[in-house]
Image 1 (spheres, rainbow, N blue to C red):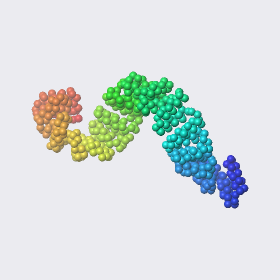
Image 2 (cartoon, rainbow, N blue to C red; image 1 turned 30 degrees about the horizontal axis):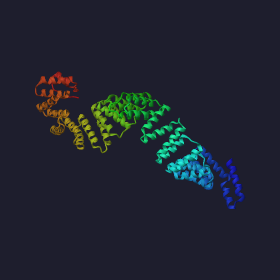
Image 3 (tube, rainbow, N blue to C red; image 1 turned 30 degrees about the vertical axis):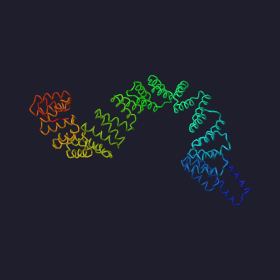
Image 4 (spheres, rainbow, N blue to C red; image 1 turned 120 degrees about the horizontal axis):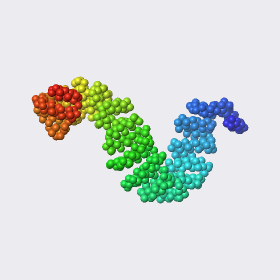
Length: 567
């Protein structure tokens, strides 16, 4: 209704002094039809039908390019639909049409500030302040524009003006202090804070600012003195306790270090993120962890029993303490709570591989592959575990898929082919097995383990024994004392029927202190082939006592007969 009355007044004024041409414009612009269109735009805007409202107000402007209110409404709508440039353009037009409208001008200044156009914002706030130099909101924003524009001296003067309007406040003192720091006027900056603290002795933020200033300017004694004062006046300030904990740690005062850490952790303002980083900071400083660190970390599991990062932290601490079995459990709990972090999954599966937990490794790799289907290492470890679990067909399937995700990593690709070779050999797919191992050696010709394994499987299958012997001899040139490689060499000699030479190899390994069941059993095998049945039985029984995994070994002993190894 107010708008309608205003329009009626304008029509009366124009009719009183306008020409016939002007009368035509007014009749179009302020006719009942136009007014209804304008109000329909308002109603549409209120219903949050923003795009439709924009179309209506654009139609209004098409009829009357002098209607500042339509431009202002359009500016709001453009802003609400994230069309920043159009929003500012429409508002500039509204200000041009009604340059005395402070509401328009203030809104325009705010938009300039929000879009980091500090030059225009500064100029616009300056115009406003000429009209009312004591408007605190304008002064605050004007000061911010000057600061962002690096007009530091003008900014300081503006803050002085603001202080004269609002009176002395801690916030203005802090802003003035910051300006002086930017200007490298350090003594003046310090004096501003000292004066502010005298004026507001219970305002802890001022103390905190001065403490930071003293630490930054290497005046640690003054900073610590104030820090103790702040701890007394604000005992629930967790950041103060954290800073004191660091201070005591640097002086090797463990009692007070952990006292302050516990006080800090009890403060609600200290987030889990900060607590985790603090514990990490402290335990990384120590070669051997203090029990208090572990205690603090375990306390977090009670506070945050569903937070994966807490169990990751516990795992890190346990791992550093050499408690790898416990660390694995903690990491596993972390991925149960939040399975989205690949780095933790990688930690889990690598540790399961190292601990030879092949059932768990196979299961976890399959789970992780569903979440991270392009991580080649997961496919490799899934293949390794499948081979160990005698799931050779599954191993081949997962390894062939994983090959696509090895990229340009030739070593990784070689490992895939080596595992494929093992799986194919176990499935009696000899051509595929040989092709896979040949690919592995071509990609990584100096990989001793792959050469050894290829030679071993050839010996097992009694295939290309001369080639197998040549490969293992090359390996032994590099690693002459590795018992795995010596065992493979002895096994090749055994399969070639060179029982005395094989026995000599196996016995040399045993004399060097290695009492592996497999070596002992092979000694018995050689003795049997050489006709020394009693010696063979003695060694077979010793291998069984030491935990041989050969399923056929009890039968060998019972029947006093040689049977090929079955694992």
